[in-house]
View 1 (cartoon, protein in one colour):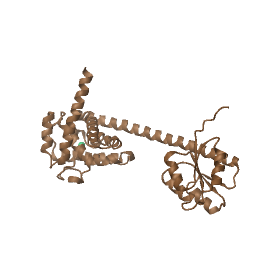
View 2: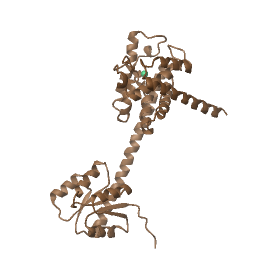
View 3: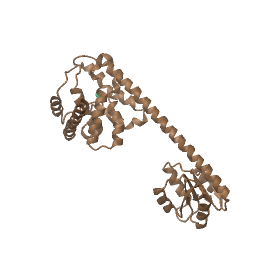
View 4: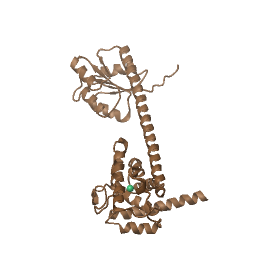
Length: 341
Ligand SMILES: [Fe+2]
C-alpha cells in the first residue's frame, strides 16, 4: 500500500488526556501530530517543531489558552490557532477571535469536523505564507529599484564633479572592510554600507558651480557645500530601511573637537559609525585627485589624518582604522597580483 507523506505539523494543547488522544487519532493519518498537556509543555514543543496549525484548549489549569494565544500573537506568529471549548460562552468566543484565534470547535466534536477545520486552517496558512513571500519579494524589488535609482543619482553627482567619481563606491567598500575588522556584525555592516555609499547624496542639492569649482571655496560657497550632509539626511529620512544609516549621512563631517558640521557634535556624542566613516572618507579624498589638491601618497594621507587626531578625528579609533586600511591595501594588492598572474 502506498505510504502517504505527512508534511504538515499540528500541535494539540489540552490538559484532558482523552481529548489529546482522540484528536491525535483523528489527525494522525494525514498530519504529524504533537501533543502538550499545558502551556509550558507547548512552548517546549515549539522549540523543536514549527506547527502549521495549533488546536488549543481554552480552559486549562494555571495559564489558560487565551494567555497562550496572546503570547503567540505578540510574537507576530501567523500560525492558525483553533480554540477548543466545552462550554462556549459568547464572551469567551469573541475574546478568542479578537485575540487572533482562527476558529473554534465545541466538545464533543466529530472527526469530520476536526479534519475540515484543520484543512481550512492549513489552507489559510499556505495563503498567508504566499502573501508573506509576495510582500518580501515586493520589498526586495523596491529596495533594488531604490538602490539603482540612487546609484544613478550618485553617477549624476560624479558627472558634475568628475574628481569625486567612484568615491562613494570606494568609501562603501573600505567602510565595510574596516567595520568588519572592528567586529561589527555582518547584518549591521550590510545596512551601514549603504550609509557609506550614500553619505554624499546631499551633494545633489549643491550647485554645480560650487561642486566643481577649481581651487578654494569662498566662505559663502563653503557654507553651501556644508549643507550637503543635512540635505542628504532629508533625502534618506523617509526611507524606513535606511533608518540606521541616518547618523552616518548627517554626521560624517562632525569633528572630535566640536568644530565640524552640521550639529557641532563633540567627542563621544558623534555616532561611532559616523566617526569611522569620517576617517575612511578623508582617506579616500586625500588619495585621489581633487579640484583643490593633487592626490597624496598613502603615507602622506596617513600623516595628514594623524595630524587631525584629537581635533578632527577620534584619537584611539583613528589609529585602529589606519592600521585596518593597511590590511585592506595589502588585500587589494594581493588580489591585483593574482589577477595579473
Ligand atoms: Fe561629505
